[in-house]
Length: 127
Figure 1 (cartoon, helix red, strand yellow):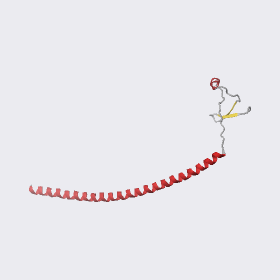
Figure 2: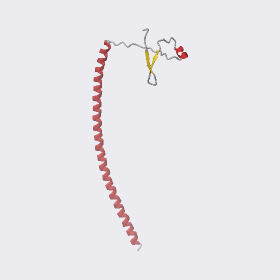
Figure 3: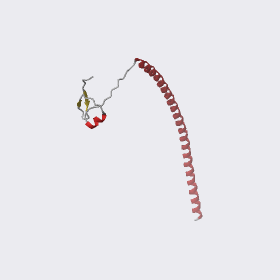
Figure 4: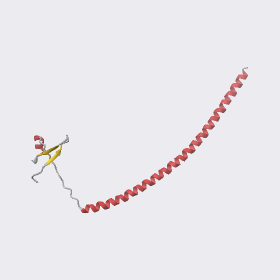
């Protein structure tokens, strides 16, 4: 691997060809201020045994995900039922509130009638 060419994409969008010399020391890189890069490449070995293990885990994950989805559906159903119960409670509260509003209106009218009667009696006494 003596003869190789490295092209690096620059920040400005162009390509820059790097020389083939190898940097021996990182301090030299800083001192020389050269364009060499210290690149470590690791090979990724992919075994077919890992494929079998990942496939079995994948299917187990799908069944776990399916179970979680079913749980979420049941929670959503329960949530909707609770919302319906809250709607019924709200309707009954609104009915009671409206009845109380009617009673308050009637009491206020009755109070106004008593106030008018008292004022009439007071004005008759002064005549």
